Every structure is written in C-alpha cells, then in structure tokens.
Amino acid sequence: MLLVPSQSNTKAMFHPDRLLYQARYRKNFEAGEYQVPCALIIGTRKESTDKKTSLNDALRENHVSI
Image (tube, rainbow, N blue to C red; front, side, top):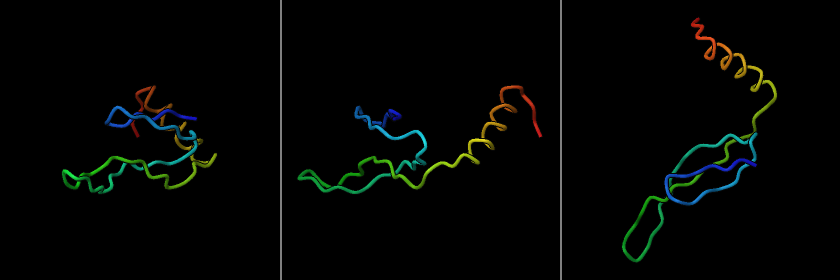
C-alpha cells in the first residue's frame, strides 16, 4: 500500500499500482458549500507502463535529452 498525503492533514492508503487523479467534490455544510479534496482511482498500472517509465527515468537520471 502507498501512503498518499493530501493537502489537508489527512492521509489515505492506496495500492501502488493504482492510477490516481487528484480532484475535489462539493460538500454542503451549515456554513456553506465547500470543495473537498479527494483522489479518484481511474485505473490500474500495467507492467508495460512500468517498462516505458523506467526508460524515461533512466534518461532523466543520466541527463539525456531526445
């Protein structure tokens, strides 16, 4: 599991292969309507994605531009 800190003081646990999108939703309180931060799970990371991103990471670490 991956601990993902949010902008507030709360934290959430997500599996590392999940693709997350930072979002907000409206919530009504007595004091008014507020935008509450949340994380949307939009998919699962595939092994082929890891191979592609590992190449990008290696290029960045060695300061190689294409």
